[in-house]
Image (cartoon, rainbow, N blue to C red):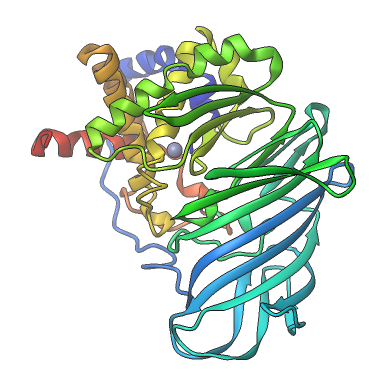
Length: 420
Ligand SMILES: [Zn+2]
């Protein structure tokens, strides 16, 4: 993820930083280590295997109707019930794999399904939930632009899909999204197909994420997009943009295949997913979000000062790096989020170095250094940090200790260990 300010105001960052550098820096101190709030991992008594998620929308009412089939394996002994995260979902029915009704109960945060018979550790359990909700978070409607978009990180997916909503479990999934004819739907993984809906006014888009990933990376974006198509080593690379921003979008995203090549070579792991799509949407909460194989980005990137090329480059480089750091390898607990965000911020510099040379990388590095020192001066806290107020771990992200300071640690490790 990248916050909006960094992406949208990228060109302005250098000025204030230069001025700040003239001021005497307040003395910082190293903070005492505070154990993460939920240490070491959130515990659950099953392994989530697969979810098949059918959703349809009533846009004027901002309502979601869903049918979600969940397959999981109990891992902590026999059980006769399964609890999933479910934020303010109204559960209409639960049925087992043979279509028989199951008992269930739910409150504002969980749904607990009573299994038809006790499942042993290692058994495969499958059940389907029908539900509806008007989500306050997780799924967002922009009617004036006919756009719908989702945001999972850190703990928003549960507000429109019943799931295990923590990073320390990886599953595969499918989305079957019903949308108005004329709309396009982007989601994770491979497009299985698009078929007509029953009424002729809708189509059903079927996407399949066939390599496991964490559920905060679930993504659906719906809109009247133009899809610009490119490729890297035969893997589809495309850009889902408003039809009136095609030229700016090519300038903003056209470097993506060469970035994928650079990262694949530097990291020694070829780009690991079925495709790479970037969608550009209005009213996005952040600058970008690295939903696996289907990154979401703010449309402000196309009008950034200095033109879309410069404004988008760090954002594109950052979110693409997440396809390795965050999506393929994932911090299991939000207190370790620097492993996602510090390493991707570091990779922005690596991209500058490989594409524009050492001086460009140094400038990037120096800018991060200033931000990291300011963050340390403002608040003494270690890199791994789990103490936060409220329910949303996203507040851990943006103090400056996670992104720029995390990147500094990666630079330091590279300096100590060298490239190998
Ligand atoms: Zn990020």
